[in-house]
Length: 278
Image (tube, rainbow, N blue to C red; front, side):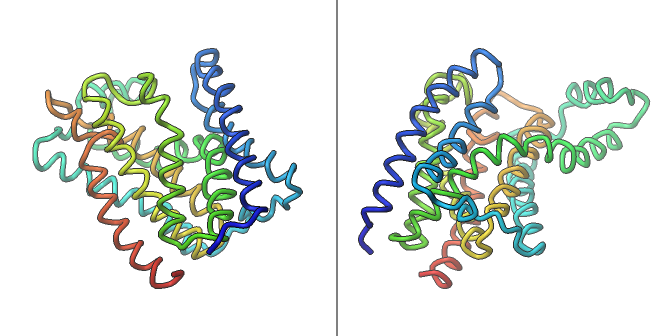
């Protein structure tokens, strides 16, 4: 399908505002020591684009949709991350569990008399609830842009597969400057490896999130998926894993295991999406 003049103008405006606000958000990282302003900047670019183009903000997909799909959006990242770390722990790419991290949890929660197993369960429950909710503002800022405006606009002239791949690549590309600058990622594996693995993970996740977005017409499925992904990955599974000299190649969003597992899930949702949406 040919891209219309209206979509061309909308996308060019959105990309221009994204770059401008990215520079401001990037500067604020150093001033505030937090990534939230940068994550919110792209959402602001999407909202301003809608206002300038006189688009209703409701077109971004604010309807909640079914609870079944919201629970699916919450549980899918947990399943992907759990499988990833079971592979890591069972193959000794990383160990279960880091006793120092658990000791710090006991001290932080002021529960020093609790058994390790109890504090681990408690921490995972808090991660899936309190920590999950705390990442909402920053994640919502991103998803208003990527699965709100961008996916909606791309779907006017691209197939489901193309929408998922293009939006996923642009989503990952948006993170590249932080990875290249060493703000995000690690200092041990080669830069090309980090960029490849991270991009594969995000493009695969994008396939799943785009399917849920198409299926429900709800921005919130992407928000819930993204919140679950960030909370469980960053607050629970990665820090509790005992690292060895080779773990950095396999753990977290810059490790190959997550990328491969997410890719396998993405193939399933790509087949479903192509069958249902063309």
